[in-house]
Length: 337
Image (cartoon, rainbow, N blue to C red; front, side, top):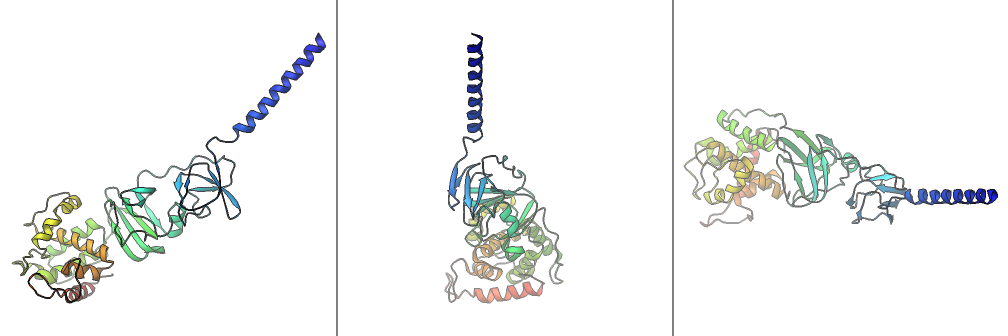
């Protein structure tokens, strides 16, 4: 009996050891992990999924849908080199910052960035590929400068508020970014011929748009052409009036947008609001048509202007002459773009 009991004890111990061995073997593989084979763009990946790329294995750190430019070796924020399902939880992105979205209406992949200057390689490291971004959310008091090229080159687009659609000119064009709180310190001085009151109005708007003073110079050039700094306030033959000669029908079309942008109803008796309204429309035209000169063409001639176009009175719309004059004044003031 003693010999039999001893034998049964050894057998039970062996069974327990085998059970533990199998338990450790299978619990070492997370249930959610999946070997997805070779990495591919336009594919949804979950946390702890593994892929192969350029002869190496990578483990997904953040759930996302892959895009060209987001190859595992390019975006350490999304992929960790190595496999086995032992990757730590993904780093929590900053919650207080600017949120960039892959799609319009704040859709698709979202990446949050805090204050700082981001070259293309730095954007890649955060999970943002080249030529990306269709909408963004900007916290109150923050300013975002989106650049067309790496190292803050090319066209610059400035945002001080959220945009559910950045427009066809900016869409998928972001290659570097500057993010800061407040507005940049103006690096311009008031042109000598500009009245102090006009300069105050334009600088207030410039600060609202986060343009660093350059937009104020452009607005002064427009006001000089449109109303001679207020001397031409009786109005144009097409019923435009005010410092920037915005026509009533145009003003009415932008009233809702004005309230959303400036947080108040438009007051046409306020010269400050006249400048705000004109500036909002001009900024929209610049963004839509790609640069300041084209923006001036369509601010004066309308979205559908073309050489030879006429107005409802049968008069030629000489938007090119208008743009030439305003742009020359703006550059004479020290305009930089």
